[in-house]
Length: 495
Image (cartoon, rainbow, N blue to C red; front, side, top):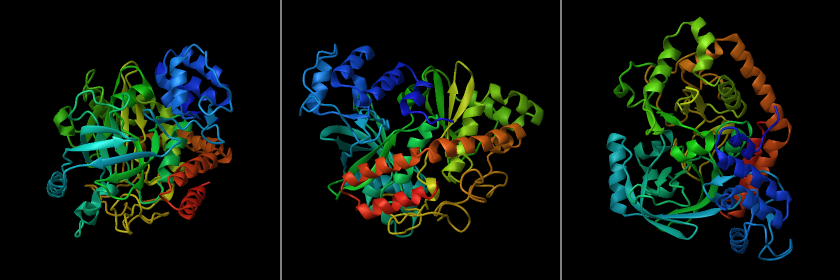
């Protein structure tokens, strides 16, 4: 298997926008005049902001926008019209919307303390994640009346602990930012949702690297940026911010008409009958609500759970992208992620393609990749956030991420966790179990592990990604170089 660029990977799944990104991936090796010609060929200058392989000054952007026909003046050494590589690498890191992944962005949030206290109280009492209004400033641009709510599961455990310490440090919590929750059509160049991720390491390098390699493996991934993050005037901390899988993300990744369903941590992949209400705490439909409902998902779960072995082996390919799922399972094993589809968090999305009427399993939540422990700030179990100890193999004594309760029904058997981070780490997922029970598909997963090892690790790609992201994190000045080097080295031990 040959690793493919972010542009190539998404061009195989997405619409014309991904073709434009593929064109701009070439810009790293051409002159500014040639780049302007590429802009003209794309028919838009909007793709420039999404091309992370180059770094341009604001004057460059104006020149490109104003001279899309290729009539651009200046030379490669000019201060205002030169295009320079963001780093010595040819990696196409992409970006979250128009937020370039090659630079550290600044995100500051302010909100009313009483509204925050009420939101925390509601979560502690009921588990509900309520929205509050906030003012959000991103790279100097301020957005009023933005929706803000908690996002996460085990990473929020500290809010339910006896001392509730993480509630006193909102900048350490995982957040969903929704620019148009209260103001219609408010966006950042079309981007409306950002996820501020939790991580028990200071750098979040493990998730940033895992997301890049996921894309290189040809699977749908979330783009990521490093952010200098603060709330209500606190000192800035480094946080990883990623895409939230929604309609915009789905269109970019897959194109066409479809739907996206998120598996909830409180659920599983069991069939619960044909009443959609039975899946309220099991799956949430995150995208495609204008074209379909839960019906395709329910029919899929019915087939996976209730078809006999022979029928499943013969017909699953009509319902599921077999190659993509084998690659997904192989990848989770390769990055030593125990918190995947058959892990304790049930972390996954299902994408449904209306044209092919088949599903693709989508990876989500890679903050435990490369054996990272789920410990929180100052070592508190499960508190989540930026600045914890981190490290390999730090799950709780029952094999769960620290702070997460076992799901109803116990830990389950089968392959749960065996694919993602070692024996006993996961729960039983019927799709994984039945898929791997077919000798042909188990062999496909095994072969794909070998291919990915060669393409991502042995090729030097993973090391290049680590070096690139380490340089980005170090440039923030928010984490000392020794910590960056130490956490990068811990990831490198995987290969």
